Image 1: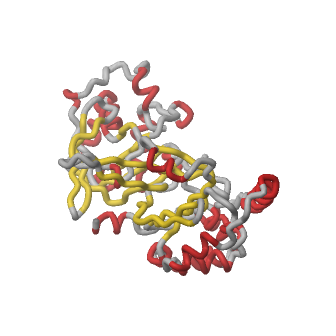
Image 2: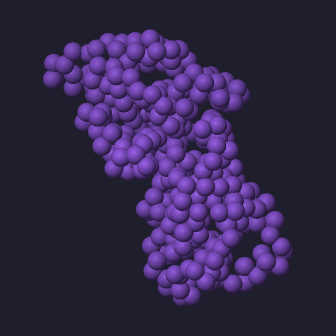
Length: 348
């Protein structure tokens, strides 16, 4: 639990304040919902959500909602799902980043309304989600809800729920709506169509060797779309820790390079809360061993040093070592250029 608290500490995309253009969908939402309420003659439970938030100590969230003039938005009739960050989640934001958000009223409104999800069905549907569900928010972008059921020795399974990787830690009802308490603040850019894995890695030069592998194999961003994938990405330092001769030999052997590349990719969206100790199938046709301890998560001989980086096409975990690859165990053929499995399932 200590490790999860560390890796879930807030880390907003570094260029958020500069690169994000607010969509400002909440004004359209108020008009639409006001008209719908009048047509259906549904009474508006004014302040219901805000009252429950206030009574349960979410002072930072409520203060920001009031500061932004969003009381009416958060008082519309449900059913809605509110993703409510704790006071500690807001405190974990870098002060400089937080202050830059406070002075940008449009950006602040977008962030807050991103925590209010439109739900046409009863919110109890969330407990019935099989694996993953994307739902629109008042802000205009979508959030990704993942439900992980971990079967143990008891008959009942333990269930973890995340939204964009943030862990749901508590629940409160608010009339027809529900408030899910989460352990970090959500970023509206997480599921923006431009926030792909390849774009994230390109923005960070410390992953250039991993990208070089992709380029060497002739992969392009347009060649590989969907489904959702989990990728374990070694840093440049991890590759540079290998003997120079081994790294050079790797780039001279496309078969080995292809296997290595796909050893880091698993099908599905596995945030840290969705990983369990044991084998995890990967696209090389092999399994990699996951080991979860109070001190962290290891993948074979590597440790996850930064977890739960949300992208529109899945999730990235950064690791500190190159996973030992086993060419002889892989089911990938040597016909790289025409390999259907790779064309269909590589993570871009």
